[in-house]
Image (cartoon, rainbow, N blue to C red; front, side, top):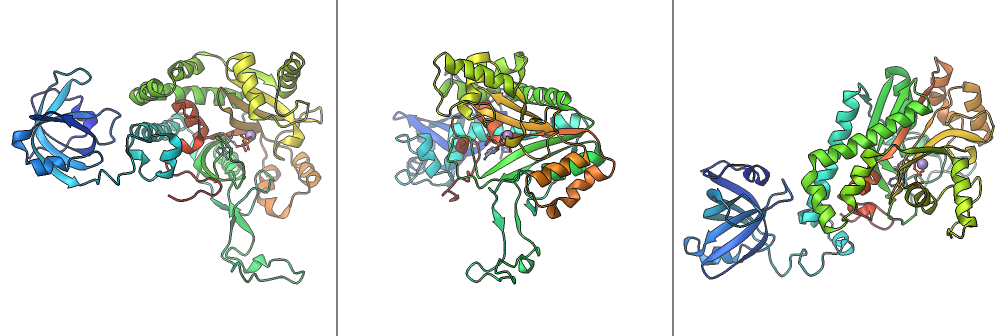
Length: 465
Ligand code: ATP
Ligand code: MN
């Protein structure tokens, strides 16, 4: 018996071999004498065509070779007379590994909308579209590790369970083993967290950055790449409750170095997708989004625009004066919404934008304070179709300024002492940013909804699969 070859390899093999293929049936068609089976094993967007002489295979077996069934096929790899593929398999024998009830199989031709597929998210990887997306996702993860390793960054594993709140916001998932129906109380009547598993109140992390800074101020350049959790009840096409974030953090980088790295990083990743995942990107381009390939190439070829938040606000105000309507009115000090970000990127500049020097009141406590007393050295990278894809900053390196800001915001010192040690002992200028992995994938795949670029999405009221 021949050794099994993956479809991707079979399609690149010269005709003339005896081969063994295994996979799931996409379609079966044919006439009285011959059946044509399109077989896919997930190794590529392309199927291999199996040609079956009906006289050579039992009719009852062939009847069970239906869409979704799993089969093993042995046969001769021959040149394909049909267009669309170089080779096909002339089957000698077919083994049915797993039947698939054609009536109950949830992936039918009749409803292939993304909304429907989310309701059968456990099976949607079997579709061409999700096959392409999930292969791309895997390749991009690999490209990210390769990028940082080639630059000598250390991959730092930061904890998922934390007692700190990196953003100072309240959108965290609490982690507890306390009995919810009978909570232990302290003397003041509050919940007694000393009795909880970790002896204190803990949550799932919203960012690995604070620990990342510990790494950078020891190892120089680090990056994290892991799951991140935010209990934000915003049902948008760009937010997940569980997503993956890449957070590089670099000693001795100022905000300019930080922007240069972010721009180079994201361009390299897009380039990698075009070079290494072309079939999948092309498939998504042709099926859903004819401008996808052009948009990807465009990002590689253009220098990102860099301007300050204040300059951005001025442009938006001018647009309003000229008659443009935004849902959320524009004024200095506001947190930009996706509509504003996309206006700057898509309408005004027509290319990605890096916005810097945001008002301190809408940014996190750890960002480096500018001399004007009003703004901080933040940088957000804004992308077409998406809005914010990266958020980062130069960090405040001065112990005093950082401590003042923590006090000003009324944050708890106690849970941040370890973080303040980075500034107490051998503080250094440093910078970093966070790239939302799924936001990157939205861009690279052209998908509209973030639920469609992660295998098992977690969003409000949805954690089924
Ligand atoms: P947004 O304003 O879009 O909600 P943010 O400013 O809260 O994002 P940051 O705290 O700066 O986000 O996080 C860094 C990056 O993580 C963002 O630029 C984005 O790419 C990604 N990100 C943030 N929140 C989410 C989420 N809920 N789901 C998916 N990705 C996210
Ligand atoms: Mn941000």
